[in-house]
Length: 160
Length: 391
Image (cartoon, rainbow over all chains, first blue to last red; front, top):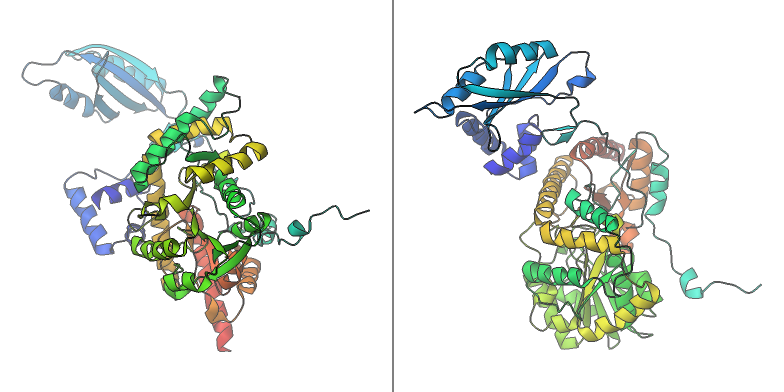
């Protein structure tokens, strides 16, 4: 049941408990309890809204920053990660395999503010060896939703 | 001038589904719940494989019975899903949709005067295909009280010395009915005893919501007297690719292949390559779509219950078949008024046989948002009809 609830609300967290119970063939109390439990266990960590900011007048830039670091003795990567994710402008921090260590996603009002963050806050850190900043030019798909396409029912008449 | 037309074909009625949808396409804000094909796109990896086959220049015919690679995958799939083995060399033929399979199976098996038992309500093409093959359709009227399953007694009552073939259309379009193992065992007993054959149309087999689909071919003694029709349209959302398959005893498949090779040559090559990918790596797509349909099915059943509308719980395909007899009008009258007054199109049950009178086919191959709007309108409409009845 948990997996079914999660699969559904991952795509649509606004579904009502009543509807969700009907869709999954169970009762409202079960669904409500499972959700509360999963919130407590931090399986469900938040409910966000997927926004295409490009369609608003709000100016925003997002950058992906590759960060190479030297892990600290006894603390590994976790301590460094904490230093990174504590900055409010940092949106995501992933430890990754491959040519660098952390993938940091940051959102700022302007390119300059992002650049400033990298040069003033990120790069000077003792453990940071190097960074490479990639500005996002256009977002095509996010969280499984395609941002650039409108859907229309194109099925035609057929004898069935 | 002489009459250029064949009397046989002129006497066959066109399908009754069309006329409603001609109106829908012109009406603003109209919602259709009438379409009988998946609303999902074909999974991308399958489309990609089709594109790749074109890029590689695989634009020739395949052998008549289909790509060996595909027939092998079909064979493995049937082993895995229904536990029946078909030899890809001579017991499988790849067709242009399941519908071609129905047509050529009947043409390969029927002589003039042979009777074909067709349970209704069911898909509209069995009867015309039978007539075109020179057979004589004998309709078995399925009943709501049996959840539109075929019972042993109904079958026995319809059999005569001329009966050659039984069409078994489950999971069923339009009712959503399924046949479970016990139901099939009762039927198989009669089939073997009376020495008749079965054409089992299992195009909706992957859309079963009460345990795994059971095929009649998997029952003892049935494989040798059954033609199994299936395809990619419903399970993999591949309707436009026009690809299906028929499996059966090699003597029958051999004759079907003759008709297929003269009339069709072979199924579309691009589609066949895409289908190989669908069979190899498509199980999880099928499971995802099945889950989505199942959620909508539950939602519809709940909505009907709230409206107080009588409807048996269907466990297959993507249709529900509610009863509207309480309103004292025909299915067609109901559907016409529903479309005119609430702008929702549904198909009258009578489009699938006379015994569909008093029922509607509602397809849930639509997004939940779409279904919600339509169900709201339906609730209003039903309320209004009940008010009218009180006066």
